[in-house]
Structures are given as C-alpha cells and as structure tokens.
Image 1 (cartoon, helix red, strand yellow):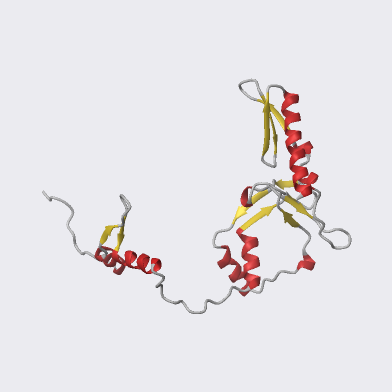
Image 2 (tube, rainbow, N blue to C red):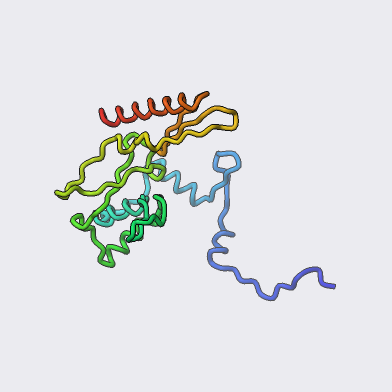
Length: 205
C-alpha cells in the first residue's frame, strides 16, 4: 500500500525559485516581515538615496483628459429613439483608464467640443466623485454651456417621505439628504430647510 502519491517530476519555475530564495526578516512592526531587498529599498528611500529615474516624459494632455473622463463616467437616462426609458442614470468606474485612454488616442479618437450635446456637472457641495448623482446639461441655442441653477440640483419635488417601522417619518432627497421626525409634515419641512441651506451655500459659493 502506497504512503502517498508518487512524485514523477518536480518543476520549479524561476519565480518560484526566487520566492524560495527570499529571506524574510522582522520589519519592526509586530506580525510583519519583509525581504532584505525591501528593507534596503526602504532604507535608501529614508536616506534620500533612491536611484535617479532620469527625465520622466509628460503624459499627452489629450490622454490625460480622456483618462479623467473615463475613470468615472456618469451616464444619464438611456432613452430609445421613441423617448422610452431603457435604463436609469448610473455611474461606471473604468479600470485602467489611463491605459485605455492611451490606446483610444493611438486608435485615432479625439475630443471635438463642437460635437458635444451633453455634459455632466457635479452637485454643488454634494458628495465627491462616484457617489455624486450630479446633473447633465445641454448647450443653449447659442452653443453656450451655462451652469445650472442650484435649485435644479436640489429640486424639492424629488423629496420622498416614508414612515419607518418605529412610527417616525423620514424624508429623503436623491442628493444624499435626509431628515427624520415624528410626523410626516415635520420630516418634509425639516428636509426642505436643509435643502434651502444647501441652495444658499451653493449660490453664495
């Protein structure tokens, strides 16, 4: 009876051999060990003796601008030609945006502002980046892009008031605002006051 599987051939890759050869040592932080090479690198960094990388080429401004647009894309309602809504607004985060941007520029893609029909604006004083619903705007008849009025962002008609399990009422607005009170009218009024403060803050800058 065999004591275990028979090893016919053992293959050790270069990466595996290098991993085996690495000697780990205490880092000074409990439970954390590092290789000697890593320790040497960190010591050089602390002493300001890292090797000179030479002149690092600047990123093409077109690539940088496209990468910034691709990193977080705020999509508006998706409508078919008949105006029927196919999807709600959503936000998409793009992995490796700089790499994709470089590839698209190499493929010949360019930004033509004169062809734009929609732009996204962040909510004044709202949550940052990916969590911000923002607002999509369109050019006026003269082709200008006027900033929307703060009241467009904080439209009180978007308030929803619901009763909670404990009997209290909660008023919520899509701009990440909420107010809870013992009655429905108090919850609504409290949220309206918060919205008014937000509008005033955004207007006065």
